[in-house]
Length: 127
Image 1 (cartoon, rainbow, N blue to C red):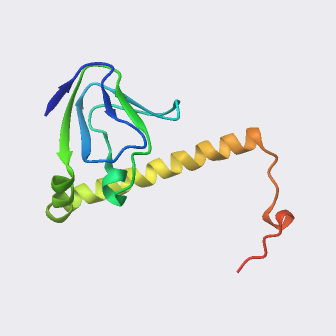
Image 2: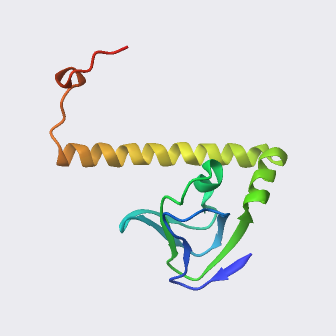
């Protein structure tokens, strides 16, 4: 476990991911392109996406308060999948919840910023 002072950048967007973080104490804030995405508190986790798909980090996560975090390496992360099915289940449930929250945000943003048109109005023909 590691202690992090407030203001510590734990993850920077558009950088390679090498670790997964579990918050033990304190809080962190995630943002993308300067826009707030989420807050993380004890029991929550972040950093999994770049480990799962070997892509770049999709957000920046900064310690909002002093934190204690469990830092899990890429190798340890993948080892957990084979040895702890409950870990994989919790990860999938949280990823699903995050996707739904993102869909909700996009729906709200789309409704306020664009005039929505039915697919038929833009030439969608189906399969």
